[in-house]
Image 1 (cartoon, rainbow, N blue to C red):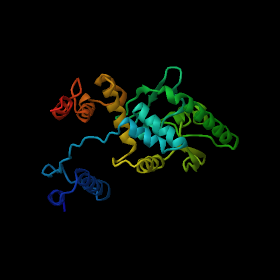
Image 2 (cartoon, rainbow, N blue to C red):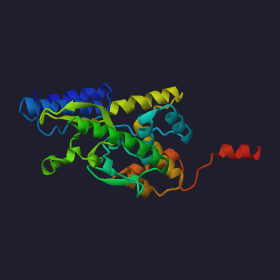
Image 3 (tube, rainbow, N blue to C red):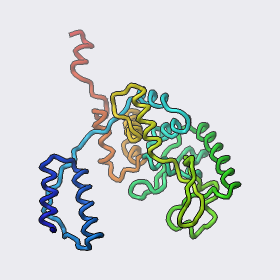
Image 4 (tube, rainbow, N blue to C red):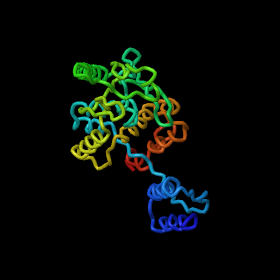
Length: 279
């Protein structure tokens, strides 16, 4: 089998009504099979009928709903969720924060190697400075104990491990949200600590949304959507919001203006005008 059979299979998936992501996953699996296992690349596959990806508006919480979700979170999960909402970070961007990326003096957070491998700067919310500083105090004591026990190292990005062999145990390179357990690095034979696993906070936020009684689907990314929408509601320039979110194109950020359903000023429904006039 080759290009013709692959095209027929992927086209049949479209006829069955699968989503674009499901069809793409099947395509990537087939490409891996042909290239890596069979070592017979199938060609360009130019006649593939691709499933259309639907354009959907993001789920956005009101400020009261965000407050409810945070109310039903505790400890580190609450701090991380508040930081995601307060700075507009993606989940993995927040989890991969290093201690040196938090600048308390300048009230800013440096997001390293975000989507598209781009660095950017976002704000450090004033209300989170004290809780975050207290959290880092506990993490530093945790790290000091690891060092006394002969561990306390983290993985460094790119080739920094070879360039600076001792940097992995330095305080500035430690994770802001470290995992509770260590692991054995098979390459070095050392005990190391990774950042908190994303599934921990994902479950916590989902459960918090359920306990808050919200009908909306609440995820970590919902907090990022809410961050952007609430900034636009407050009148901030869309280019500023684009920069804080790390979007390459302003058209990506424009989706939040559709969520607001307004232009420069809020659009008032005509039925509200009737009610106000007593008609």
